[in-house]
Image (cartoon, rainbow, N blue to C red; front, side, top):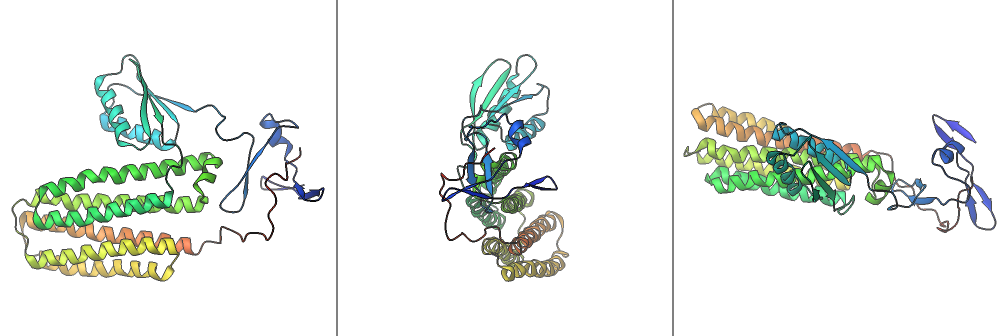
Length: 359
């Protein structure tokens, strides 16, 4: 046996014709109350390692998290607290107040359950509301969530520019409302990653390595922030009112918006394909957009009042969107140069039933 930095080394031994065995560290076995004859469960992970569990998935008691809040808590503060508890990933969440829960507090909890993916009200009492996660840890692959977020963000960007161009307040309001859809997907993805960090069995179901989980979480955060800037563009509709934007200026902003949207799509493609060349093109495009922004600002210098302020908001948000795409491209480069996570499959597989670890 070898020990280094907290890691225990064990030699593989062969018994019989085809069974391989590995001894387990005694302190690990005794700490979990295991004895000779007990069963262990093995699951291969995406990075080629093997996870060992002392009990099968699904036999443990459901974890309950009790959250004590007060009725005089600010609604926004309460909602943020519930989001944090949601991201922590507990299957049961009991929100409790000292004494009877006020109608205002109960309204916030119910609104939270309606907006998040997963929580449903299981039970209500005078003092508490119990929420249960009915979705589970892995109903949708994380890469699919990121792709869905991108589709929503790209549509929000396009509609925000349409609202700016046409001054249609109904389109602008729709963009603002859709921001919640992006947020809830981001929080759901963050909950999945947090749960995977806490429980290796959930990481196995994600079929991703920890570095990959981190990469997709960063990508999700970038998309969520770009969505916020689409909302900011939409909100200029009310600011501008009946102010007429010169056609030449609108065309210039539309062109910059199209380039920012294309950069975001290219950044995601480079992330999936581990394409360093394309990622560098996205970063270069963001820097070029900044230079063109300076040209638009010079044209804007002759404008006054609300028009100048509104267009400046749009211009800044387009630049920020391009640079968030640039951030995503840098993430893609980092991912592309990672050491290979999945070693080649061996020519012959060990039968699943073979190899019960000996104590």
